[in-house]
Amino acid sequence: MADKNYTMEQEAIKQHIQLWLNRPIESGAVRELLNSSVAMASDVGNIRPENQDRVVCVQVQVSAAKSFIIGVLCDGMGGMASGADCASLSIASFLTSCIKNQLMPIGERLITAAEDANNDVYSQYNGTGGATLSAFILDSEGQFEAINVGDSRIYANLSHGIKQYSIDDTFAGQNADAAGVHLSKGLLQFIGVGADLKPQLVKFPKIRQIKRLILTSDGAHYIEASTFKQILNQRFSAAELCTRIIDVSKWCGGYDNTSILIANDVLKIFANTEETAIPIGTVKLTDAFGEIHFIGVTALDTLDPIVRI
Image 1 (cartoon, one colour):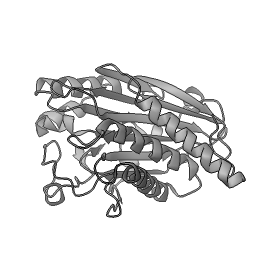
Image 2 (cartoon, rainbow, N blue to C red; image 1 turned 135 degrees about the horizontal axis):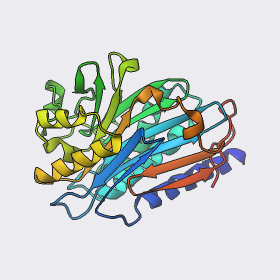
Image 3 (cartoon, helix red, strand yellow; image 1 turned 90 degrees about the horizontal axis):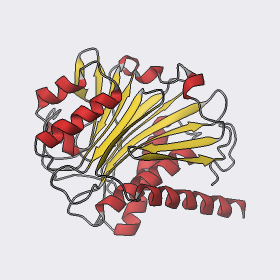
Image 4 (cartoon, one colour; image 1 turned 90 degrees about the vertical axis):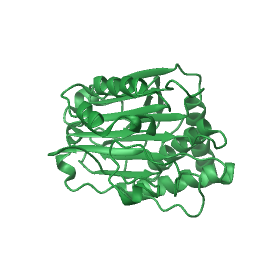
């Protein structure tokens, strides 16, 4: 009975997150958190009738000493069924899985969460709907991993400027360094594709040298490569950089929804824990338009239900 109740509880949380992500939103917004070290922005652009992007950052305070954050961006696939709902379901499923499986090593947790999201979207849409997924987990012990599915992207600024470290799941992306270049939408895999999904962790040569981490949807990829990198190499706040990418993408035509998440000084986010901590047992979910809180996170060394509404 306990396992059944636990499963029902997790499903309720997933549905609650999905409904919240599908709430009416403005055409565009920017929001910052974690002492301004993380910012997100999302904008419908100039052409599309609705915003099918979803981008969130989740902060989980599991004990006084242990916490982690999850950043995730999903782009509902244009031309497929219910793109916005696929993106919301992908994020809701992905987050629920990450929190539920918090005892797993974070790389394994990301892969499991991507597979769970893929199964949920495929079960509902049977391959007629889907979303990209770019995500990372960073914990208070300095562990960090990232994952990418589709043609949303993950960039990082190490010692030699901005570079794309994810690989687009397109024919072109598998054969070229595509940083700042918009490529064909012929996706080889996406969340909701079904049994063929093979999610891969993103490989960074020197994780501890990451100065800035960037997640983008493909609306940002219409910006010319050198301009894109020049903007993100500037010494501005994460929120200001998000705003500039949104503005320039619209000046370049705004052909698609544009969303972006930027984390500055990635491995220093937890340095000032008194300033960034939330109450123990709390999950704080933030997107570009607002935030929502859940309570009831148990300690990492237990197998009890993770979140209660």
